[in-house]
Every structure is written in C-alpha cells, then in structure tokens.
Image (cartoon, rainbow over all chains, first blue to last red; front, side, top):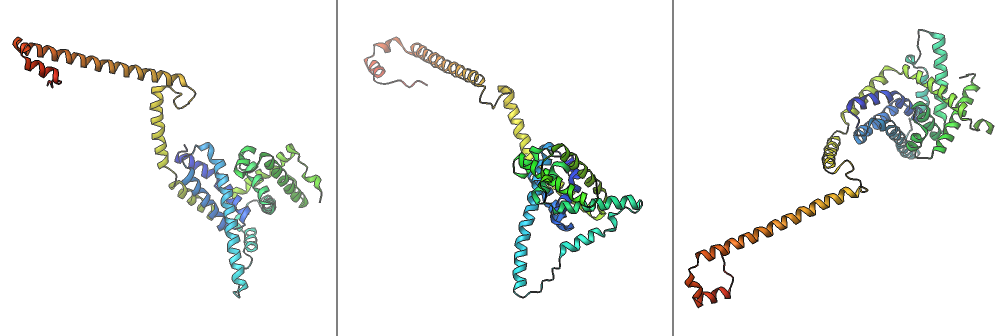
Length: 190
Length: 144
C-alpha cells in the first residue's frame, strides 16, 4: 500500500511529464492542467491504497483515459457550437489552438536568457520535437511517451493502452521513425 | 512516401527514442513557474483525497487473516492443503465424541445417585405396599 509520502513522491516525479503529455494531446495549457488534475485525483481517490510499484502503470492508464474523455467532451461541445453558429450565432471562437501555439512560442520564460546561442538552439530543437510529437497519431504518441519517456516496459505500456505488446512495438517504431525523419528534415541530428 | 523508413530496426529505434526522450526531459526544466505552482497545488489536492479508509479496512482484514493463519498454518486459505483441514476436522470430531461420553457418564452417575437416595429414603415396609408398587409401575417418578 502506498503511503502518503510515497504517493507524494510519485506524483512529484510524474507531474511535469504528465502535464507535457496532456499538452501534446490537447495543445492548451489550462486543459492540460485540468487533465492532470483529474488524473491525479482519480488515482488518489480510487487507487491510493495500491502498492507504490503499481502506481506508474495505473497513472498512465488513467491519464490516457482522461485525455480520451477530454476528446469526447470536446467533440460534443464542438458539435453544439457548430449547430448554434449555423443557426445564426456569431462564432467568436477564433482559432484558440493556433493562438496558444503562437503564444507558447513567444513565451519569454521558455528561453534561458543567460546562454543565448546554446539555449536558443536547444529550445528550437525542443520546440520542433514537441510540435512533431503533437502531430503524431494519438496511439503512436501515447506508446512513445509511455515507453520511452515514462520508462514503462512494453508489457506495462500494452496494459495501459489496452493493446498487444506487438502493437506497442509497432507504434513506438513508427513514432520514432516519424520524429527522426521530421528532425532530420529540419537539419537536426540527434 | 518511403515505406523503408518504417521498417523496424529495434536497436537503432531504441537509441533514437531514448535520445528524444532525453531531449524532452531537458525541456521539463523550463516550464513556467505558474504551471509548476499549479501542478504542486494539484498534487496537494490529490494527496488530500488519498484513499485511506479502505486501507484501514484492508489492514484489519489482513490482521484477521493472519490471526486465523497462525492457528491453521501459513497456507490457510489455499484449498490445496487438505491435510491441515483433515487434521482440524479430526480434532473437532474427537472433541465431540469426548463431550458426548462425558455427558453420558454424567447422566448415569446422576441416575445411580437418585436410585441410591430413593433406596435409602424408602422404608422397607413400603416395598410390601401394593399401592406403592402399582404407583411405581404405572409412571416414571419425577425425582428432583
């Protein structure tokens, strides 16, 4: 059974990656934070008594399900928005996704000012990588992030995604190849 | 579109993927402070909702199971250890037989005491009395 201290340490360890994982999926800071909040609360409320070793796989599964729930809710919301707009309402929902993306690229906190060249180059490479990750098909991105970023093994990733280990390997391989090709096209070698 | 780029090459894919993951890790340090502060707040909130009550129940359950297990051995609960169950059943059966024998013995002892009391309290002339004999043969005497 995970003690409060173990749960705290686990959440502190995964919170940033969880936020970025959610951000890659929804491209919006507030929505990503809401997703992380939902996932952490679900983990603590429903699985807070599980052994600490089980928490990473459980949390990843909950996080991915929460992201999928967000997609579903967004679809329903967009349907109603489209319907109301078609009935004569003035849709002042200018493309939030694009605005957020531009704002993020201009974020002054995201660039380390002290070492301009190296930091800028690193930041640019990171931006490209993050953008390419965000463009990947959802299942490929999920598999790649869980397997390589969260450090789950193939079996745990397969369990969290609800698919076979073979599918995980295929998703991971395709994601890696797509990312490498995109980086190479922009002159970045890893 | 080249399909060759998707041909799996596990060792190289792993290396590439790990290099990308490492690059992503470096990006974690540059999250805006408003986001890190909100994440810390979310974590606190989640900790406050940790499932505690069920943990306590589970502990109590585990304690009971352990106590029973100490009586029947560590393999209590595994249906495979039938010898322990047979031994327990044998002990219970012996106890029941012993208790039954004790009860029978007690009843016989009480009966002999009653008859002794009756024979001592009865005057010899009473045995010659026909009315008394018919009373004895007609019903069971209720001796207190």
